[in-house]
Image 1 (cartoon, rainbow, N blue to C red):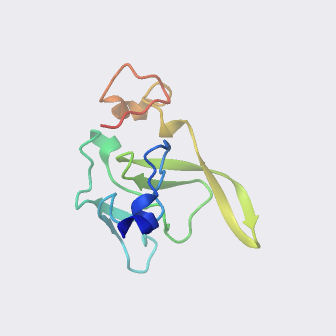
Image 2 (image 1 turned 60 degrees about the horizontal axis):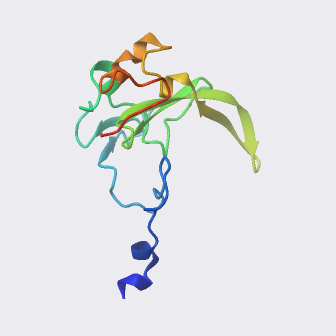
Length: 144
């Protein structure tokens, strides 16, 4: 009977990719604590799994901040946005690219930049992302 239900038979075991199978996932990425009261800090992340620092990276690189990625604070400026990814155990910065209108709705388009996978080779402030395996080239990211 269980095999007739797609959630139990449609698996992504043969696929590889960032966030494969995340739609419809229930609770696989932990508990996100966010500000939910009205104000400029609405939808900002305060903790993940009840902690404000990840043990995966040291110092500034392990701080948990930004958004959970689904919603963002009001009055986002066309500069950058920060979102925490449980899969990466870190906050990622997305940079403003351009203004865009989709189906009549105006918005800002953001994209990843060098800083998301830099290990300190280009941006000195990212040196704390290189604390697991120091011989990795820029663009490579390990997960344990």
